[in-house]
Image (cartoon, rainbow, N blue to C red; front, side):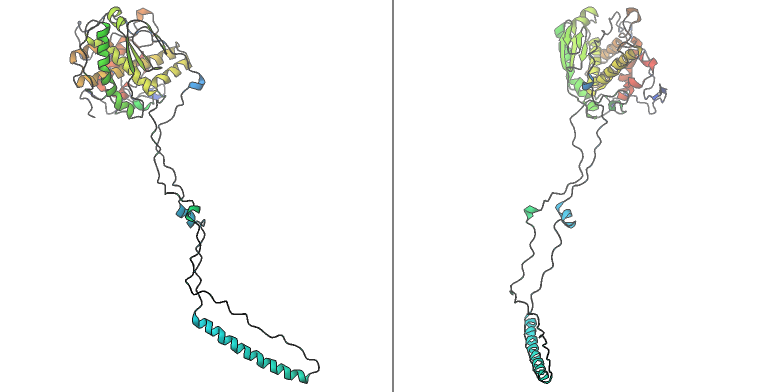
Length: 419
């Protein structure tokens, strides 16, 4: 698939080390690259809602981290011919040859001559006995009887085991291990989806519905965009044998109970693979207005979480966060890395839909501006679990301008780039 023309992938990513770990994520420029008018910049947004944490998993439920299956070959099994060569069937006995006619006549003549010799010896012994006082008796020598005549019919072939008695098997060729069903991989920085060369594919799988900010209009926009989101991310996921199916998408107008907790705003739950888009929060509380750009910005970010959930990154991040404490400084940094990667994935999706004209340039610009107004505002007193607004906007641009999963690997980024 063709790489978007705006994809600018550095040939030699920065090789700095962070906490002893190499990073392939170059520093990005925070803020507005292309410039924007004050009217395009949306102010007064509530920012992202606090994401409820799922309950920690029991040890028995922890996923087993496995490397990527490498095809392997099995030694070929022994065939029936090989077993016979090794002595299982035994050597073939030699054929016996029938005696010829001349051999039979020769044996008869020899027998008659032998009888004559024996008679002469007997007469000589009789004469000698008459001249001696104590004769001795000599036992006659007898020849072995000739072999019994054999049938002149051709000899029978030596008996061989019945074919059913010898276990034979078809030769087995070396084989590749069967391809397993797509499975998530529970890794972070070294997850296979972070490899260079993976991107959100250009897509024309959808046509965005006409937009209005009411719940029905929002739902129509979200549902119409779903085929494009699934299609754009299919290549990167399936290239690594990761699940690539679509999520459920539900538009709500208030708090909703999910398997992952209570969602008060737009939220992705990996427990049931569902996107919850809050129409009331975006239209009434945040007052995003009547342009689809900000709504698509939120939708693409949440779909980035679906990519993380399908790949196994989200569960691995939660495991790490619980291990160090969800609200500890380390745990909050893990949360920021997770959120900022989803934002970067949203930027990649924005690139894949803008290049093909599914999203127009005006909508794209407003969506980028929306990302710069979302994050951890310092005056709200909320835990710093999403990243500062300028950092969030920088990662949105990182994904949009590079469209490369390696450039969205927040897990190897500098702490300063995920603050």
